[in-house]
Structure formats: C-alpha cells, structure tokens
Image (tube, rainbow, N blue to C red):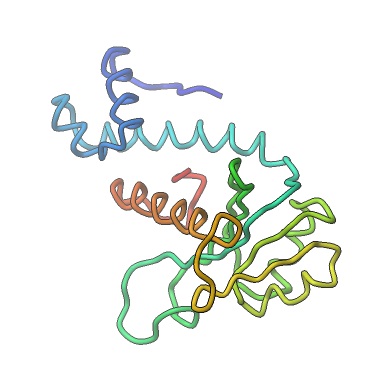
Length: 191
C-alpha cells in the first residue's frame, strides 16, 4: 500500500513525512510549509493508514518468552466518575514483548472474558506473563502461562517487575494522537 491521489508536490510530501517522523503536529507543519492545514492533516491521515496497513500485516505474530500485559483507558476528561468506571473512555489492551514488539487492540471492556481470548491468540503457552493485580488476569494462573503479578504499591520496580514500558508506550501514543486531534478510539487512523 502506498499514498495515492495526493496533489501535493513531492518535495512538500517529503517534508511533511519528515515532520511526521519528528512528531510535529500537522497544523504546525502546514504553517512551516505554507500550505493549508487541512492538506497537512489529510496527508498525516494517509501516512497513518499506510502504517496501519503494514502493522496489520505483522499483527499475526505470536509472542513468546517474557511479555507484559496491561490495559489503559483513553478519552477526554469528564466530570463525574473517574478510572475504570468512567463512561466515554476507550479501553486499549496491550501486550509488550520485553525488549521487543508491542501489540495493542481496542477492547469493549477489561473483563476476563474479553481479554483472555486475545491473550490465548497472541501468546504462546508456557510463556512468562507479567501483569498488574487486576482481577481479570486471575484465569492466567490456570491457562497454561507462567504468571507473575506485580503489585506496584508493595514492590520496588526492578528489571523483572516493571510494567512501566507498556504504560510509557500508551502515554506516548496518546500524546502523539492528541497532537493531531485524532481519536484514540480509531487506532487504525492513529497508529
């Protein structure tokens, strides 16, 4: 897949691609290049679609060895309830291979019935799985995985007991998507 039907000059496209890689917002890039902001936003969207296409091709990879599992909640700030019960939030479940790749998927909720099929499809049995103390991960103990729970309030982070890499990935993804005013709910547009 490649970018098609783009009326921008090749030199402008190359500069926009450089700005995209440098995480410059589409609107700022448009100002710097002297083009209409909507043209830059559309070009950034096309770049994301190409990236999403290639990520979908490698999404069939199955993880083995030590992996981290975590869920994050994305969405605007709302009055009222906070945290897991907050309405209007999008739940993104992530799998991180230690020193390797990340797989994320938008799920309906963070319940065991929702997460376990994804886990069984994406992780080899007998792999070491690190999670936080969310009760949705209780069934991992009897599902053929070597399961370690990390309680951040009791354990000091070490190389074996940290889940911060996946949180950092989610924070960086959220920040890069927020810069382009794209919705995190549609990860194919913001990958």
